[in-house]
Length: 168
Image 1 (cartoon, rainbow, N blue to C red):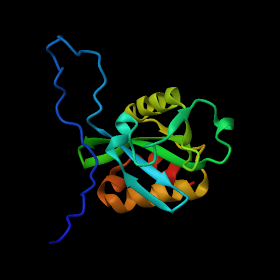
Image 2: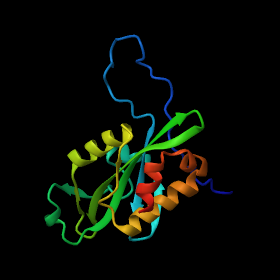
Image 3: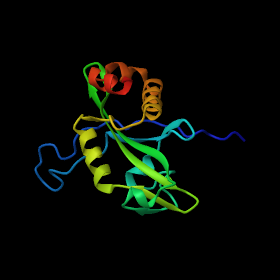
Image 4: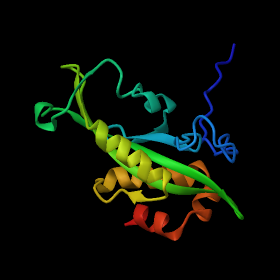
């Protein structure tokens, strides 16, 4: 029996279900076109983990979150990068990219994460903003390589500002 490898993919926005009817849900944010990419500089890997949408990603499980970074002095660095994909005339493209820090101390089962920062960065990504200047060089390279290799068409179709921010 062969084991199926889970297929990772970015979610691409469908038609807006609230478009034009003015009823329930108007003004709510659609998360159909955003995907969380986990950057693990400790093991030099990057992967999509849709469970991060509900704060249940691989790196977030089985730890208690503490709101102050200094209370997790031995925490390992991880990033949840909110990547928004849109569809343009040339096809799908990376639209917004915003990284949020997590520090995880697995032996002590504690972690640091700023929920307001994650929500703000998710919103900025949805609006097509780029928030990666606070990432370390290794993590930035892991993200860039992942996005380029994941779908070169989306990378080539991305706004030059996205490619430039991930290349610096």
